[in-house]
Length: 271
Ligand SMILES: [Zn+2]
Image (tube, rainbow, N blue to C red; front, side):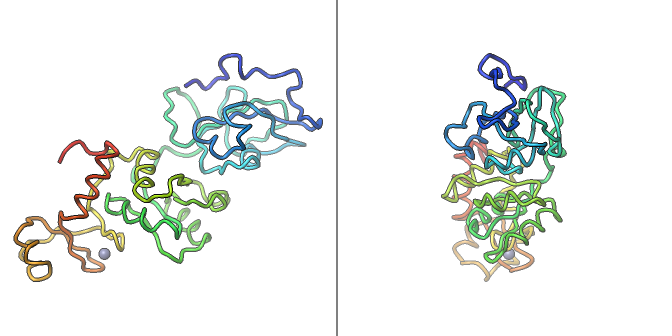
């Protein structure tokens, strides 16, 4: 993928810099999945966005329905810019999604490089997704009565990526990192998140309690005798325990289930 407006399809028309009603405008083009947020006639094509007396890149992007948290790179007339960059009219603007793989340097990404340890906070509707992520080892905060303010605050304070199906939440000024979850079924949502954030190599299956997000501790087989079904105790070698809720885990049905999901993502080769 090129960062230039390569090719002829993006060349400015004779009326560049003005909307149909004569107002100043900049010509925008959105790439890849950012098109999901646009009206159908604006997808995969260049179109004018009104600028009036000057408008920040971020404001212009959100005015057409794209949450700024979905954007990683904005190129104005060939140079990457920050969200605060003010447009005056007549510019050509290319907008690229978060984590789009770019092999061209040097560009100014709008945030520091991806967090080494991905941490999430999920909206109240994504409880099943939160449990999948925890089982895959990712620190994932979720509560069924989290409000938008609380989620935004947790995101900022703890540098967590907001996962939500609420675009309004992603448009909050404070939220820097977020992902609009497209899928509606929890296993597909999990795969979507793994792919979107390229988490394949960061998976640590069964490192966390799926109920309370705590890091599980390995415990001896002897210590769980009588606390798990006798059949399980006889058949299993390794056990882990949640220091908070006391649940004991082993490689049973959940392991099989997660292994299958991860296998579908091509995330684990064999184990
Ligand atoms: Zn627990």
